[in-house]
Length: 66
Image (cartoon, rainbow, N blue to C red; front, side):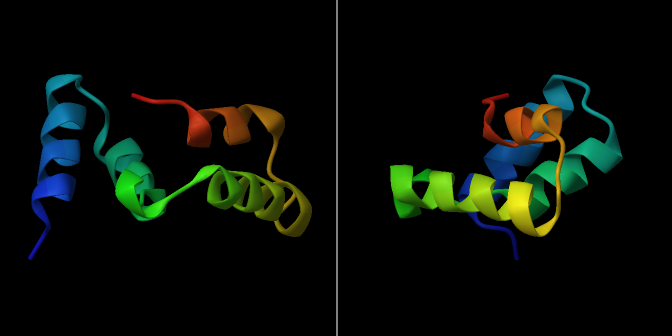
């Protein structure tokens, strides 16, 4: 069962008419903001860049608010 946070995220993405695939991607990568700090974000972006050779534009998409 989805948490209230994830339900709100999905509703917001739906209102903004994000595609289903984009919704799935955002929800897959998303963690509740209360559980994250600057070090978590930095580590995650480094992980994407180094381990998966993710493009800069993709990193920017991951860290940008919707």
